[in-house]
Image (cartoon, rainbow, N blue to C red):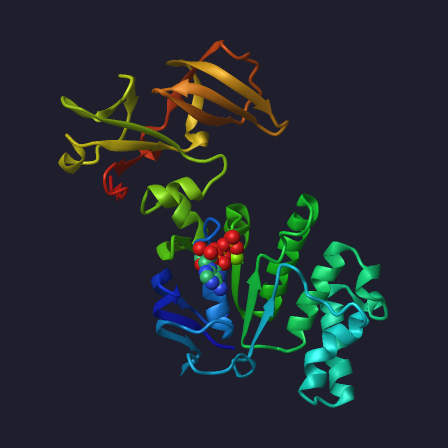
Length: 355
Ligand SMILES: Nc1ncnc2c1ncn2[C@@H]1O[C@H](COP(=O)(O)OP(=O)(O)OP(=O)(O)O)[C@@H](O)[C@H]1O
Ligand SMILES: [Mg+2]
């Protein structure tokens, strides 16, 4: 096994820069997820690590070796793609053992490794089937099995679950996480789904437009987003963001653009007198009979909790209540806000101000 390092890595296609100087350190055995909107450069970064794209500048290390000039087959990594790419004319067993066969691994050892991987993945009873005789989830497991038999230093996954339906995604998410706990192989996993990132990763790398916005443990990013982009990307329903300024006479009062006064912890003199964004996660708005009256726009009972959209401080704000709330559009409810859970961002730079 080995760690991975990206050192000031850049990539241009022709004259268009798509990776603009990326630094990421991945420890041996770590499960790291690259997440970000479509087109931000996640697959490109992964393909550079795999050796499928060359590197325009900077370097990539696997273990203590710089791999910039090392061909893909000598990098000791295994990649699982979104579209499985199984050979349709080969059985599950032959699909899984194919890379070992190419390498000239003796048949007994190949069979032993295929059998072991099939056992881990619950595929033992399907080894003689062809891909067309499998469900989507089973095919995905075969694709993973093919990677496991190679016993690589690093696993790479590029959106491996996006072809599956919602229920199967959740099941496979748990399986991949369990697999990692068992094998402890360094893993780099790409997704644009922030829930997948939050639930599976040891460490998340949030990317945007070819740069890294923030790297951290899932709950660190959730509780202490470095900037407006990360704050808006991590969390579902998303963080509410209200533009405004602090009350000139009181740093614990935020005044939104429509004049609504909202509570906030004292962020010190630096926050005063400039344009800010008030960041409030939906779960930190509570029902409070003595609170601020707000108009209900939509109510969505999920059974477990009630999601509601209300008019708050000039924006449409998402709330999540643990209680069941009966309120029709146009009616008013009264809410309280946990002042110490509010984030303030500098509107111009997007950076979060520390309290
Ligand atoms: N071979 C190529 N030639 C030119 N431009 C490319 C090439 N491959 C990717 N790009 C561009 O590089 C940028 C990053 O692409 P990439 O595939 O890495 O994005 P991504 O983050 O994986 O997005 P998605 O979530 O949609 O898969 C995009 O703007 C894309 O159009
Ligand atoms: Mg991609």
